[in-house]
Image (cartoon, rainbow, N blue to C red; front, side, top):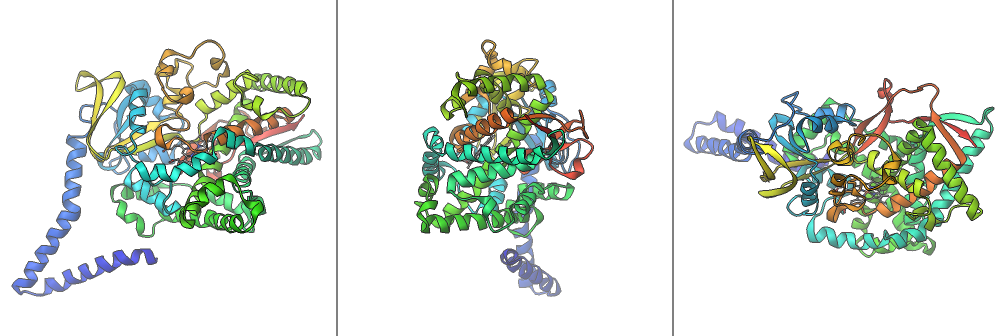
Length: 547
Ligand code: HEM
């Protein structure tokens, strides 16, 4: 409540003054009254009128796009309240790689799936930062740090974290990842052994989230979250339970337009603050142990610790949050795809088993990470990153007027053009999951299907090669804000999936059968739910059989 105090301290006296002035008839009172009206006009009414004018008559003028279903929500309720897996995919079929959608009150949003255009935007973080409103919310959640800063300050903060996440640094941490993989294998085996058919059905997503949270905290900070004094299950349930409804979407839209309101207590920032408090407790503990107990020292803590304590804790909270859910989602979804396509699962298991036999035990880290030792495994991982990426869209806002170059011509006002002019405040969405990663224009007619062989049978389509990002997919972003934990995520993903597939067979849950698994946005990530049982929240039940 105390955060509202500065606003109340300004607004209440102004209202009181107004009420008092309306009772007085002196010329000074009348003058003061009109001065307050003028101030309100300049601060609120004029910016609103000018924004409405720019949205309706200037920004993205002449660019086609789907009709907005609601004046208040624009297309935004579709993203947060409905399934989020194929909206952009359907729109692309009709409007191509560049088109407009709308936020509230007809604010135009540029959807950019053009490879050259999105590289341009993502590589110019000073011209195209995250939106002011997003930053304010992230500031509330993480109290500064990587997510909030741009340009020089961002690069300065990122440097020590980058050095903790190089390929070599991650390799040094891989023993802990193997240990954790063995622990989850042994735990599941003990549980399944007790069942008659050695088969059980459970929500895999929840268990994998515990695993990835622990993987990051144990390797990064030599600290086991599972041992933390706060109940881990409670923390994870809180993170997973952050669902949106019409009211919170509306609030987000209002905050987008009036970012300064973020500091007034509201459910949107409250959930982020709660997140920071929960994760901050762990981060605090990590910090204290890290600096007092030698054994808790790690490369990452050393790197971060060179900066001040508050900033370091912001980083720890950001890394814990960004690192666990994203990786957990993609591992879980990969297991679901393997359950859906048993032939892929069998082929993968056969390759892993024969290699492991050759090695006489666990497959060494170098081979798991190599592009050549296990070609089919590598193809499955690449395909998972392409089709199942956990961050479904990246979003930026133009800080100044600029012209975005495009790879493929588009039609605007009946003319063919290869660039698009944007004005300050222009919001840009760059869809990954059902956008650039699975665009039929770039990947061909089978773009949306899970086909690992596409990485083995000859070169990728020429248009996909135009996505000039490592791996030709946008799953980890691009430019200065490219995912700092991508090598770590890949190591985790490969070690955990390789271990689980060698020891367990994954099938669809007998209760849900072929029931569709659908995806809903919760915060920045897409989470699985069972169709028809969406109100039960995020879950991915699978049938798991011990081999
Ligand atoms: C498969 C798993 C992961 C995916 C798909 C993923 C995806 C992404 C994406 C798309 C971005 C860029 C966001 C933007 O440009 O707006 C990002 C940034 C980030 N990721 Fe990841 N990530 C994953 C795993 C991780 C892990 C394991 C960590 C840390 C241990 C991590 C830490 C971060 C951080 C700190 C940023 C912000 C970087 C910055 O702004 O400089 N991520 N991630």
